[in-house]
Length: 176
Image 1 (cartoon, rainbow, N blue to C red):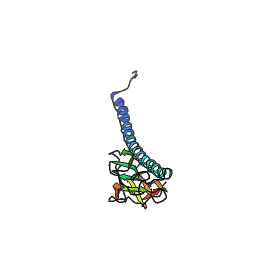
Image 2 (tube, rainbow, N blue to C red; image 1 turned 90 degrees about the vertical axis):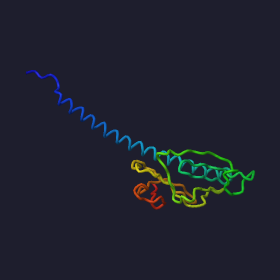
Image 3 (cartoon, one colour; image 1 turned 30 degrees about the horizontal axis):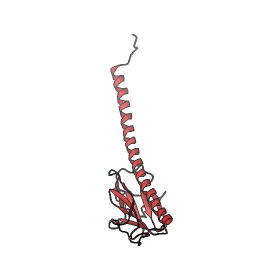
Image 4 (cartoon, rainbow, N blue to C red; image 1 turned 180 degrees about the horizontal axis):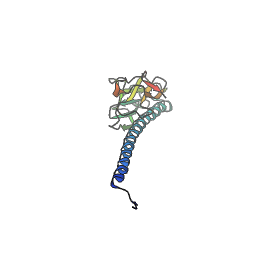
């Protein structure tokens, strides 16, 4: 007998192995993408906070950032003209920029009742605040939190994710 082909059983086994490998790769890719998107959003927010802080020193005017679950907005204190009065007033101060957050990768912060970060004319923050990613699938992200103190804005990684019962605070956000 001369067997020059594959049997149907061999073909089914090869297709099954390829299917299993493709499924494992798809799950790995989905986890990698969620980590990438989480980290990207945290890095963008960190960069924008650093920019607002730098603008305060360059322009010698107070800046403030208003946080919501869906977006953040940066304002420059210009009311009353020309240099403002050191009091945030979103209705009258100059809007610097506003950015929407990806709803799939929500953020939360250490004090939900205090949704504002203020930087004085020296670039110092008015209070300590921690901003965290609030998703259940952030295991692949290297950075998923930001700690803001009077003199620093640092990115880090949550030791215990919010979705697993961790707190959004500076003690849970370890600088990387």
